[in-house]
Length: 113
Length: 84
Image 1 (cartoon, rainbow over the protein chains, first blue to last red):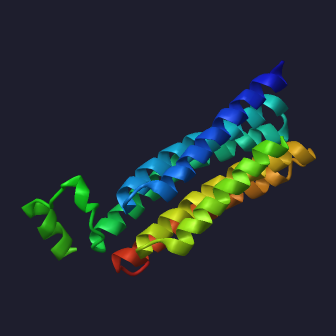
Image 2: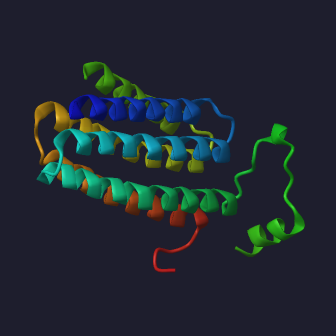
């Protein structure tokens, strides 16, 4: 019973991983790719680790899986935020067809940084 | 089980494609970040398949190391030094 529930979690997680990676390849600019891939892959890996925890229960490996889940939940969004800020400050433009133009304050932030 | 691992390998190759093709340096950094997270899931799956609990140690270490690498890459892209 526990095994089946765990495999369901793992399958859902890996499907999210796949969708995130497809987004990483298909979307047009850095910010789109980052927001698609970072969210999907974080949830997907957390699902996989939680499924591992459900299958193996409260053993040493299961608790390590919970610990890795907590680390992924904390570090992946922080890393994605740092990367998007770095991309913006290093002058990567957003997709032209998105019709987005920098406001005055943002241009000043970019120049002073 | 084998199909799931094959899907994850496909994910890794999609990330490698983005590292190879990426138009800017930021694209490559994003792909490195995503590849690191995918590999953690792969380690969990391998630990389940081989009944090898020590692979979870590798998953934890890989998470933290990948985070530090991404922060260093972001600092480098911003043009700052590491102690700022």
